[in-house]
Image 1 (cartoon, one colour):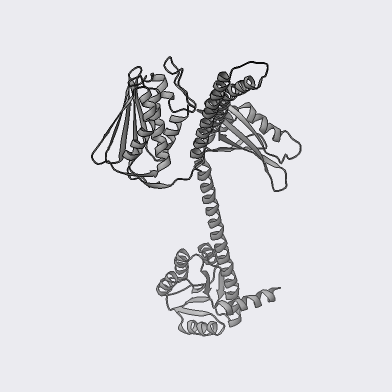
Image 2 (cartoon, rainbow, N blue to C red; image 1 turned 120 degrees about the vertical axis):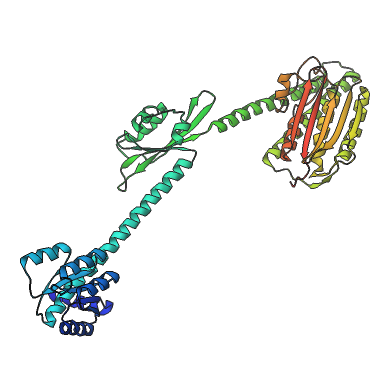
Length: 505
């Protein structure tokens, strides 16, 4: 076994050519040792005294150092101490003919690997150096393993830090409960999503969790077998203001047993609000569709009922009313389709350069006959130079048709509509001022909501889908513009529309 180790050490020396420092004041011994070691594959440097030995040994990284104990300037123990202090991994041996118990203890304390007694034979020297170099290799390997372990620990610490940072940045609350029912991890979002103002420690946090979450956790911890499924529940934290969804999943050990439970707490308040709005919207649509359909069905039943003796004039009147109701129903469906396309952004646009003055003029001409029936006049006032905009012509035409038709429908007899076009540095501005029935403050706040129609003694006979101004608002918003309303009940309303001049949509 010893022979095998010795042969392996010799091969290792030939492959790596260890660097050896010989510090000895005897020239013959120094040079003879150098020649012997170089023949055996070592790279050798020498120092003729302790001062030179310290300089070379501390400034260079030698694998081995053989140091004479007694030298005229500095003794070998001081040289040993200086070299080991600067180069802890250099394996040092003391060569001396004056070995004593005290010097052996002191040299060992200072880091000497061993003694080489003088005079020594070549075989004794080579044997001791082989053992010393094996120690040097072990030390370097140990040092490398230590560095790798420290690097791995640092990387692991960095990875944990990065993971913790990421989890703390996400909006979902993350909570980990161990098998003993203790909170072992949580991020800051847990407090926000569950509206927990303060918890001094994890035990207090656990006590403030909603009962539904506790029940889900207990479902895992109380089971004899590992439950592999995830469960979720929705919880109302603050009435109609804060809703969360809690999803629980098992955290297994490598052997398949349960290590704990992970809980993800997601704020779903906005989704709940959207769901409520959707339900309200569906209810309103159903109501708006039901009225004209029921009316038309009633008229048709009367027309086809042979037991009812109705005149031709009454029959034509019922047909006309049915056509009117179906036309309003078709308008409603088209308006709903337009709103849906705008919200889903599926409506195809053809962006062209538009002259707003021409669009307003053509819209006024379209509404002129209806306005004349009620003696309503139009007055168009424009700046000398009104900038053009880039937009879809059908959308902009729809926008002003809805605004101006409302100004006609909700105006007074012999009223007026004034249209002023102008601009500033960023926007083309159009004001539509009517002398109509005006709006109350409550009506102004709800004006752009779907299906909202102003109801008072002046609007009973005015038909409409309640979606015209909703479409106007969506068109304006889609071009990053804005619309403002000023109104006084009984005196009139002013709509101010801002459309960006440099719009590239």
